[in-house]
Length: 225
Ligand SMILES: CC(C)(COP(=O)(O)OP(=O)(O)OC[C@H]1O[C@@H](n2cnc3c(N)ncnc32)[C@H](O)[C@@H]1OP(=O)(O)O)[C@@H](O)C(=O)NCCC(=O)NCCS
Image (cartoon, rainbow, N blue to C red; front, side, top):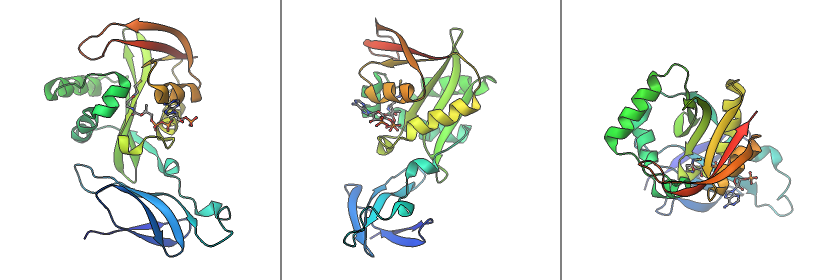
């Protein structure tokens, strides 16, 4: 059986993690209870992390704030390179993500052409979202039809932990352009919330027709001034 060791730097503790078929499991070891996620990427079994844990010693449930390991604190942005494209392509095919975003995934050729073009644009800011050097998504700022806009996409295994919000916040610290625009299917509540937490406000809502990239859906148009 494969086992992975994770060092919790802040506490100096060591927790042995054993991946299972369900990917997520509560862990009880050395007096600490926690949750971990075993993420498999095309390049290997990373990233691997402990989402949070608490001492299981009686009366100490809220006494370990320094021992909480928040993945979001380890989120970094770095430039996307061509080597990242296979991983980004893999992420782009996720049916759950496409359903949420109301998108139709590009086929391999269209994907390659789209990203080659984007990487060649000197004014586009294309950042990998990484944790422990593993790419788990991307966030970008691009100009489309004369409008500066942001977009992002995250590996589903990492949803719901504040990572997209943190990544967009980091991008907005790097990109000084304002106004910045964003459009999002109104059914994509998580994305709407990410934008609003970062200061974007809804300017208008309309039903957008389907095209080769998007399903017909009601869309919110947001702006950050
Ligand atoms: C949209 C996406 C980037 C969100 O990433 P994430 O890391 O899970 O987002 P965060 O955890 O930073 O924030 C999500 C927020 O939405 C909230 N949220 C999630 N689902 C929700 C729902 N169904 N209704 C209301 N709020 C919801 C969360 O509670 C959180 O808000 P909070 O911090 O106030 O609690 C991710 O789901 C994704 O990659 N989706 C596929 C691609 C996509 O949709 N891209 C954007 C296209 S516009």
